[in-house]
Image (cartoon, rainbow, N blue to C red; front, side, top):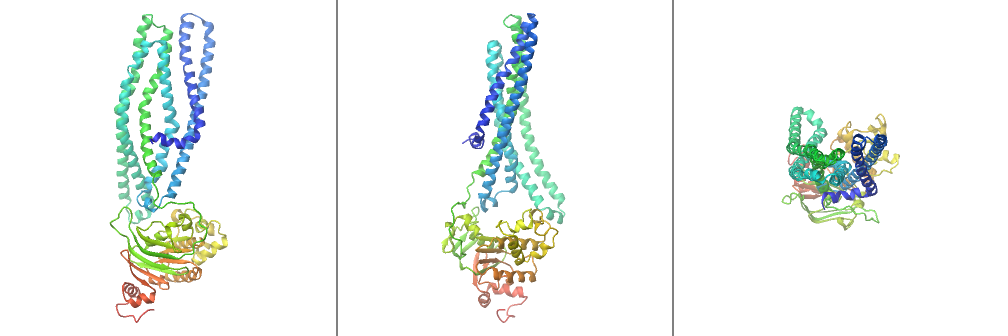
Length: 583
């Protein structure tokens, strides 16, 4: 399927509007033929033959035709613009729906700037093609054909003399298209890199300022901007090389008409009025030739934009979002059976190795390990953000892959390591996973997360709008709001990924005490670096380089005097052998 066939699926709903526009283009073309013909009549009959009584009627018809033609052309321009806007609206909707379907694997390997370039610059290039390039191309083709027919009727020798130039124009147009296409692809890639760099800089502006790296970032931007400028200049150089030839050949038509046409008039083979009329139709031949270069550039820009958009729309998520309904609520039993995992782009590096454990409803599982041990990846398998490369993850004694993915995730709430808050009210952020939650329930869960106290002190309380990504809130405040958001969802499985790392020990203890009462009927996974966060867990997994090296309760692991025991001693500030046992 080529790009024109592909875009038609988005244009098709507007086919009635397009049909009317095409009819109006034909009407416009017919109206265009009238005035040059009347100009010829004016010269031959009014000026040469002195039939002055024809002057006013001819002028009235010419003015009337001009007004009607202007109205007709304006109407179909509006129709095409409406079609283009509708097309890009549907296209952006399709792109955004696709973004919601795609899984973690796609976002791990796709720059945000690249996605934004597709949603903005590329979609606008497509809109421009549908709204403007389409009707300009159709107009040029119809005008060219009409001009050939009418000019041939007036004087076929003069018409053939003009048409003899068109093969040269065609050759230069084809050469320009071949040169322009790869350049527009490069421009699009450069624009994507520039977008990504700017997006990253804006997102990390506090880090830039904290490390006084403004000059470095400006230099980096200048390099990307220079690259974008250079590639646009390469495209401009192609236009500079070919457009003067196209304009030159188009301009030569006027010279041919005056010289050859004048000789025909002198020889008595054409009337002066015929030559004037012929010259009046000349722009219908001239304009398409002049426009061909510009239209080729726009077509190549359209094709370059289609490449990335089609690629994204054609990307299939590895984990499909199904619409099947889940009859019963998930209880929360979780079992890992010989589970291993590696990312698709790095199959030689196994992130998780042969992990097995069982967690029952109401139990709490603590997960400890150094940075990069695979803790977050492990809990991501529970929510099926990824699927294991070997082994089985079971939920309620059933392979997790058999559950409809949306329904599975509706039963799971995660407080992620990288806390994200939307630029919205605190209340709406907390109720994000359960929009129907009543206000008193939201406040109750916020109180359990120890967030109610500081939220109530804000100028507008729960209706306070937080900045983008939670700007204006401390790390601990954002973590507590994020925890409240997970609790309001009322999940069967609660996953807390280093949720209390930014709060003090006293606040952490208070939150844990409140959570203990709330999670009696939930399966809870707690990823932490502090043993105090998991020591009361029913099962503790000690991870190292993707392996579960030890598992058991706090007392059992201390008694083993292995890796967990070493961490326990360090966090208590004890040296080996200075503890008498579990505490």
